[in-house]
Image 1 (tube, rainbow, N blue to C red):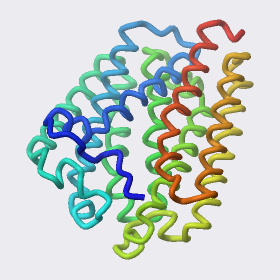
Image 2: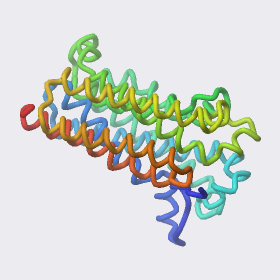
Image 3: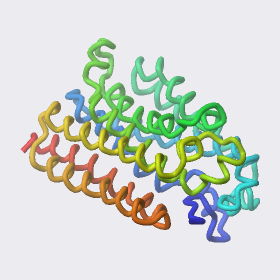
Image 4: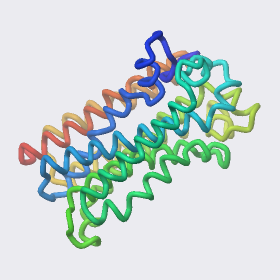
Length: 298
């Protein structure tokens, strides 16, 4: 199970930079913000879509670059992560710091240009995203921290679309069922992902559910997270007046989430395959919700 989505496989410096920030994961996270915007019931403009996209791209770029810097001491000792850009030297630490700075500037400027609420609240997601590396040094549940980081994109989409509406109204319009569905779905698959580092984490005192509770219990906890996520995504269909398009997406997405757990229960060698299922799962759930809303909940 020497799988690592952050490893460098080409000599290109551009490729190394893209691996450092996991560019495909960043791009595929954009629909979570769009879900928050479209399910909110607020009118969504192209300017808001562009700015929320830039904000999310900037934040994830900064956070992933920073967490790679912060994890240098861990990654340099873990054989699974020896091919990461900063470890191999294909990206300089100074370059990674530039990504942190530029990404943060793009994020905060985009937040300020959106509206007063995104401007005022912008430090909160930034601090949460940047502190993921520290979370696994403090407790055994960094997977929930990561889930919260991605779920905040849903809330951020609503706040971005809310303009200058009263803050209580904006908060009330956040699709909270989808928010918590994302949180527990991400926590579940990150728990499965952490199984690959079970022995290393346990030996070096790195916090994770597998290291704390063992692999068998970690699989049970991941399944519990995922069953809760499926229920919350299903609840979202009722709460936000979604129709058959979302129902179809929810059924397919739920089946893939269950399949992800099934293949890992069958063999731990399937952890990389299970992890890679999450990009299509996320796209199916988010795009079906957005399409359903745009079609009028048919």
